[in-house]
Length: 157
Image (cartoon, rainbow, N blue to C red; front, side, top):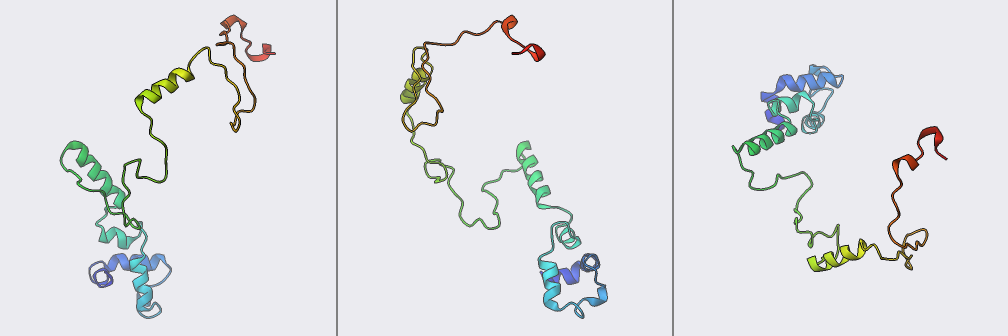
């Protein structure tokens, strides 16, 4: 990559060297070969070298173009993009993902819990180890106040 940038993208390299406060004559004199190689290899995305090597396309521009082409039906992405630092892809299966572990419920169990949760005759009592700050004994749903009974603004007390 270093040789390609020096031979094909010299003006971009000179521009980045000038931005760093050096002169083009400092290349390979004040700046050693390893320092020039570091300037080239570690050039940030907004540098002239990156712009020249990538022909003006950032990674984000490539991804947006792929998304637009995918939505338009022009291109199909068959596998996920390779990402730096990601060597092994995790499964999308929630049972295989250790980040969120939970017991699966059957639909029958879910329906039973929903009925129990919204049962108007249910007594709400603090259970040992729960995070409720107080125990509530409910005799049913609370009545909803009428609009003229509500206090707004300065009249609220």
